[in-house]
Length: 215
Image (cartoon, rainbow, N blue to C red; front, side, top):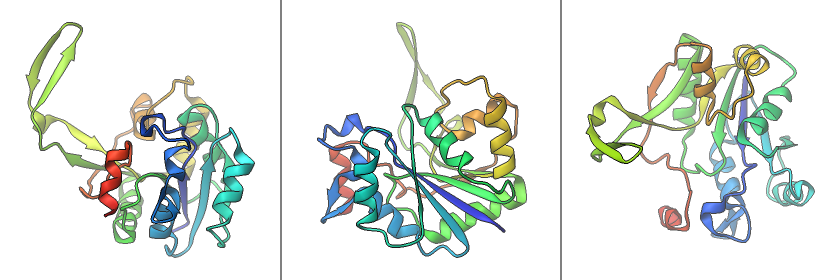
């Protein structure tokens, strides 16, 4: 199987309230993005692509290269996530194989779980990890809200794995809407999503309070 892995790190990370985008916030002297890369870098026969912010791209590229000596493609992102993902996908010249798209601020991922997702995608066309909610949930509609059955809802994680050719085709034919993730894009084309049970520790670092998970 031909495997590509796109590490998304092009966001501004405003909710972290940091002077630098959250993917570059240092924990134990190392940016969160590098912690994430170090967890995946030993995947066999995998081509890595890192997408960095458009603003100050050269600065961030120099920073990343100071930590990564491997043969990794570092490319420029865009203003919106879907456009940055498009840049990453279009960087792949070969339409065969599978691509995993992962948030650069999910540093607690494991190689075994990633390989499971690749294998699931190979069998069923795609693989989207999820976790169940342990909290009661309510739905808000305008000025009203009401309880919903939490078993009917799941929380989506990354990496999400797709056929390169299928993802490229969807991106080429999309209306240009700012989809929040690639599974949402597939919904636009009525392509069946293959949900795979995720892992609870695969959290996304969003605020400074999340940094406690590194300790």
